[in-house]
Structure formats: structure tokens, C-alpha cells
Length: 240
Image 1 (cartoon, rainbow, N blue to C red):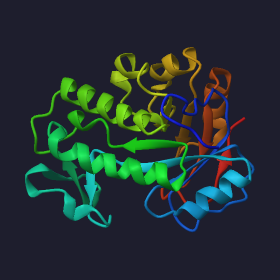
Image 2 (tube, one colour; image 1 turned 180 degrees about the horizontal axis):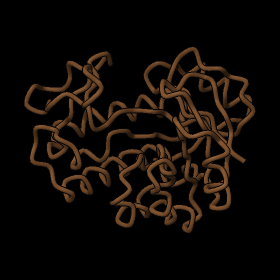
Image 3 (cartoon, helix red, strand yellow; image 1 turned 90 degrees about the horizontal axis):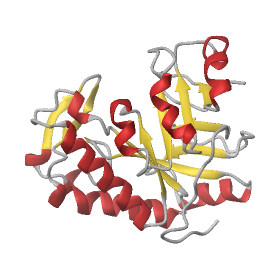
Image 4 (cartoon, one colour; image 1 turned 30 degrees about the horizontal axis):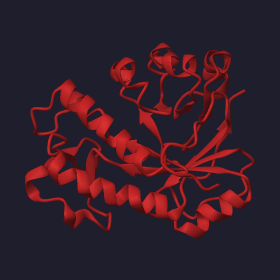
């Protein structure tokens, strides 16, 4: 499944997926798409999934710095903001500082490309809606998110927009698919329709609602919906 810049994968609506950020990854889930942690999985895991006919998305944080990542020391103190609520080992990043963050994220995406991933799922891309310690604006976020999308595409990687629903109209043309958490629980699913209307997949996960509550809503829309435990272990309940 090789690819070069300009010929990256473009997932279409309705593809079933597995979302697992714990390791070791359970390799035998019968779905065409996996979304797994970029750092914790090596090229052999990606190759094994490819051999089984799967496409593989790399989860990677781009809006916060995780203390447990091997490149955490690359983030200088001046770009580290408040701790992410609920995640004491993560700190928001000053996304205005492309001069600092750009090379770090480029190295991360190089890693994803070199391991053979087909796509990236950049997380924490709606920092402007949170108390980060920086005076971030919606325009700052748009600039950063487009920059991140370009970094991925330059490496032949597809890129998904994680949540950030309010900015979908401005970003749908820059991203190849969406990854959403809990749009049915929060009654936000209509915001994701521009992706489906553009022929792009919406990989959707719910943590609290049973399948019978969300599948009747999202299945007719063409979303790729699953229920997962919030720790994103291997267990998975598929929508219709």
C-alpha cells in the first residue's frame, strides 16, 4: 500500500473501523480500517495489518504535549501551557508558534510515514475553545489545522479532522475524513454532514450510548459508527 505526495488514501463514507489506542493491538478484527497509536506501534504492526488488507491511521497529538512521549523534551517551556483538563500529564501547546511546533510535528509525521501508516488522526485541534494559558483565537486554530493538514499531505498521508465541529465549513476541503467523539450524545451530528456530502468518511465513536441509541441516527447518514470503552481498548461494538 505504498503512496506518494498527491496520491494519498481518501476514505469514503461507510467504512467500518477499529479504534484501539492500547497495546498490543488486536490484529484480527474484521474491518477495513484501524486507528492505532503512532508511537506505541512499530512498522511491523502496520505491516501485519496491511498484509490483512487493512488501512491504518496513526493517532498523534498535535495540540498538546504528552509527558510520556519520547520527544517531550523537544517542546521548550515557552510553548507549554496549562494542563489539559482530566489529563494531568498533558499540557496545551501555543499553536501560534509554528516556528517551534512545525519541525516537531514534521518529525512526528515523518515517523508515521516511515512506519507505513496510511493516514494520521491529529488530536487536540480545537484548543481555542479551551483554557490553554494562551490567548488563542479561532483564526489561530484554522491556521494551525491547515498547516497540520499540509504537513500530512506533503508526506503522502491522509489526514482526519478530529472533532472541531464549528470549523468544519472552513476545513472540510483540507481534510480527507473526520474523526468524531460522541456527536449523538451531544446532538451534534448535523455538523459533520459536510464530510459525507463531500464523499469523505466520518469515523464516529460513542462511549456512553448503546448502539441501539446511536445507530438509527448515524447509519442512514453513512457514518462509520462504533461504541468503545473510553480507554479505547480492543473491545468494540459496531453500529449497523
